[in-house]
Image (cartoon, rainbow, N blue to C red; front, side, top):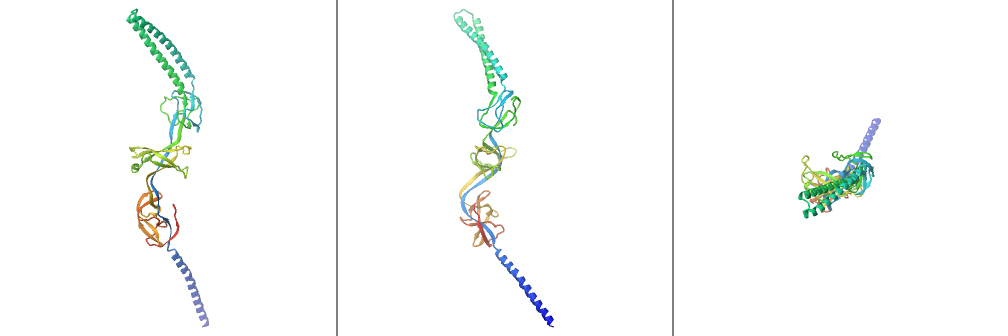
Amino acid sequence: MKRILSLKKLAILSLTLALFFSCRPQKKQAAQEGSAGAALVRVYKVSRQRISEKLFYTGTLEAWQRVIITPDVGGKIARINVNEGDKVGKGQILAEMDIEAMGLQLKQAEAAMAVAQAQYNDAKTNLARMERLIKEKAVSDQQYEQIKLSFNAAEAQLAQAQAGVNMAKHSLDVSIMKAPFNGVIASKNAEVGDVINPMMGSFSATSGVLTLVDFSRIKIRMDISSTDIQRVNKGQTALLRVPGLPGQEFRGTVTVVNLAADPLTKKFGVEVAVANPDLILRPGTFGEIVLEVSTHENSLVVPQKAILDGNHVFVALGGKAARKDVTLGLQNTALVEILSGLADGEPVIVEGNFALEDGAPIEITGEVKL
């Protein structure tokens, strides 16, 4: 009997201890649930500042000027005085043609002109003598007309000879290829000894002798949609961002706005010019153009992530989330203008606001700054 009683006491003690230890984690869990009942949030205090609505377009950077250097006359290249990457000034001699044949042509033309000049002088003297004789009735009208015709022919031959000299001199002049503007040699398309014939049709990007570019200014061409073109104007400020130069922005100006859309794409061509005095921007690369199409000063703004469903926000009010309906104005990728529904300085919840309900308990863990 005593053994049975001892077993009963042992069983009761074991049960008591089990109940005691099982209650302790439940109390701890209940305490944890109580502290986790408030949503952790971060807020932004509504402020007034400038906000701009922006359009973003991508385009290819192009040199402001580009020309293929080629002579006006055909022949063999005698000298190329520059290399790829060289900076050159306007009027600088870049390359020269072989002028030996051109020099001989000039001498031939000058000799022909000397003969024509002598014939002209002789015909002029004869005409002057004949004019005196005709006044004295010493010669017939027929004789006078023959002398006058000879003079006219000599005069025409002299003019023709002079044209031949001018043409030969022109050939010599254009055989020297000069830079039409300040720029950089983008490519060398021929070598000394190559024969160039400018009359052999159009030139490709790698034809001619040299390719000269001026990218002290850059232009970017874009295709703008019909919905956005109404807000783009000539002279408008634009910002250029280049992936290869992170964190840098280059200010430019809209220089061209096409009035007619492309018949295939139904989009409008727009061109932006950007100064590039240090030649940091390189033609052929891609860039993003940012156009500020509308700007409001001293507006109430909040971060984009504060707006829920496009019509309301939550503000922190007495340790709880309070829903407020808002009217939106201008927007960009970061900010939204608030036309009504909020006041300056109100703490708007910007992090932890998803799935919140009106009146839900919250705990502010920090403040977001813009």
